[in-house]
Amino acid sequence: MIHVWVYCDRPGAESGKSGRGPYVAYPDSWGSGRSRRRLVLVAGVVAVVVGVGLALAIVPRSVFGGSNAASVTGCATAATSTAPTSTAPTASAQSSAAVAQAGTQATTAAPLSTAPAASATTAPATPAVAAATQTATTPATAPATTATAAPTTSATAAPTATPCPTATATASAAAAAANVSCDIIVPPNPLSAQGLATPYQLTGPDGMSPAASGCTMANVGALGAFVQATILNPRNGQLSVYEPLVITQGTQPAAAPVLPRLPRHAVVTIDFGFNGTNLTQVGATPGALREGNCVNGMPGSIFGQVSFCNGISFFGAAFRAEREGLLRVPAAGVSAKTGQACPTTRNFNMVDQDPSDNVTSTYLLTANGQTAQFNTANEAALANATPVNNGSDNELLVAFLDPTLGCTPFEAPDLSQAGTPGTSQALNELSAARNEQAPVAMVPENDEMTLVNNNFSVQKTDLYRAEVGQPLVSGSTGTSSPAMFCQDMVDIQTPFLAKNQALLATGTSPVPGVGNNLLTFLANRLNMSFTNLACQNFGLTNPVTVTVDGNGAATAATFNTTQQQATNQGRTGMPRPGQRMGRWHHRFQDPSGM
Image 1 (cartoon, rainbow, N blue to C red):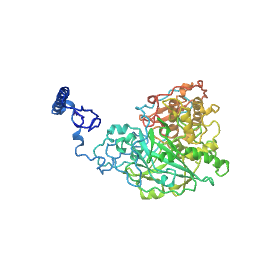
Image 2: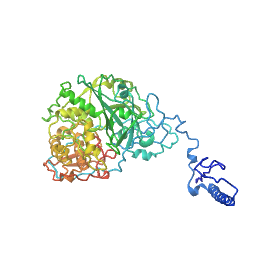
Image 3: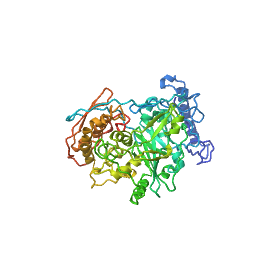
Image 4: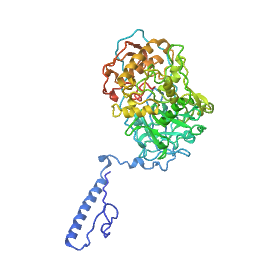
């Protein structure tokens, strides 16, 4: 329908004062002939406009397309509807996002905080699928041994009635399934005990509802978010961990989070992980992000999957406690199965294109899409709930590599699990800083999370490194060079995988859709990382050839262990998003899902 709006002032209104609409200055006298002629002319024009409007109003709807009035008549609005938000079914780690229907967003109940009207800007979503391909390289000695991995378990949320779409929740089901970006609402005073125990809320970007965007914890495999805290007592150097809960905005926790007891003057760091591509922090209150010293990246260029709160202060305090002899980080040890030092997250035996990313938090997910902290009490109370976690380098180390190699991760009491020993991203970084020997795999400038407009950025790389306790980029440090990172990854990791094929093939694959056992998973991950870091631009050759099944999962691998030398040390172009390899929700960040 075409609407004709006529704005005018009230006749006789005082000159310079507007009635309804734009300012119109009327003449002082209505008696002159020129004024009357002007009035007649204006009246004629108005009559023509009104007549045309009336004529258009009776033209059959099919000429211009139907009015949208029918689509909203009788619908419940956001202000009046009490229907709960529909949630998308859970997807496994290798599946695409489930279809979520658009609907009104249920009001968040106390004591949860709601997001402010203006949310933080999200980085553009990565475009379409880049299919995994085989890389032709010089074959190596023996093909990889394969082992069958157990399929990933997923839970399905029961659908609920869908209210009429609102102005901020009108995305189609297809748009929800294709979305790779979400917002996470950070509670007030996030570094306090109450802030840690207040659930974080997952919602859609730019005002989209969870249902319209697919940003629900029921859709954990594609768009699940996770939060992890590590706590230092600066007086005695004692460490502990805590896993703040993430819920879908508009829902309640399946069980109330544990309120941790923090030591006086505790120094807390909070790490965020995401199973999609871009997770943007949004403060529940105007001061929440400032209160937590939260860092999402640079203005206009977020890190992507990860973000941090108070990392710089935490690592500064932890390193000071080490120097004073208060904090003692244990030795990583030696693997009795390989005879080599147990790896850390900064070890080239295990790094990928984006090292030191994501967290080890685990939640319980119920069939209706609610979440709870993972602990003994909640497991007993929620017998049918499914443990879910964040695909990450840290989880790969502590849950897959360490058990296979016979190594033990660095642990501290988990305050969300009644003091049971637990792991964290920050603990892994402290262990790496204490134990890793040169060459050390720091976050490189060609890590896609530190790029700005697909270009290297020392400033953004330094910002990321500072939040995980790593030294800043330096021309005197070999691993600060993108070319040297690629060279060391090829020359160190490839022989490690080739030498330990039989052992690694006995390990479970973290993501069966990438590799059918731990060996083939690592091989495919190295293959993808080589391409996504643009290592070929430094005169290097991809050292891995993978054989994949019909679903794109690696079932065998061969390795070229010839040592290589980077011939181009300069800054070089990075592959565009469509040229990167990996699964569609992870092809830009964590293409292997870990």
